[in-house]
Image 1 (cartoon, helix red, strand yellow):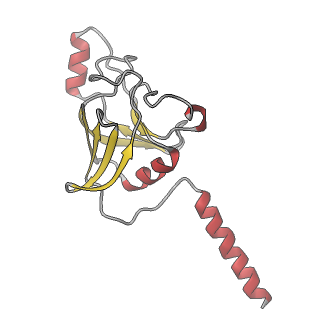
Image 2 (cartoon, helix red, strand yellow):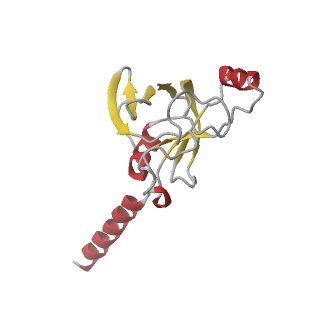
Image 3 (cartoon, one colour):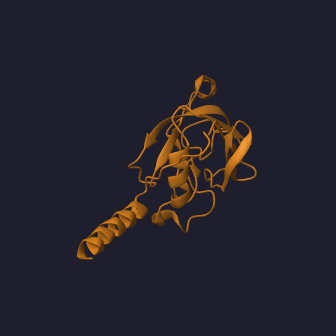
Length: 164
């Protein structure tokens, strides 16, 4: 009986430790595209056109229009890919978006400006909980809990379409 109690305690401790991790596991259908509809403030995770998940999002602090230059507070519009991940982000977890692409760079250079970079899908840590809906410098923000699921579901190389 005593050994049973010890085993039960160990299993319980391990399962509770697993609940506290920000790293989740996903076994469902592959996410084949991420679509962001800026006007709707929605992000959709798709599997060949079928919506697997949808999230309410926050955008850059100047949400109207396409990002043109560094520091303009706009979220870019166009087609990109997830090109990196940051498990130690100051925004909980983050997935990098391949902004700027060649078109974005050419637009900024034509204006004599830097296009900027470091555009991510990321969480919203406690420090920003009372921030307005659109508070980032051009990133796409969701809750930390939602970001844990997105981080598990979306792999590097996944296409991302950001629409007005």
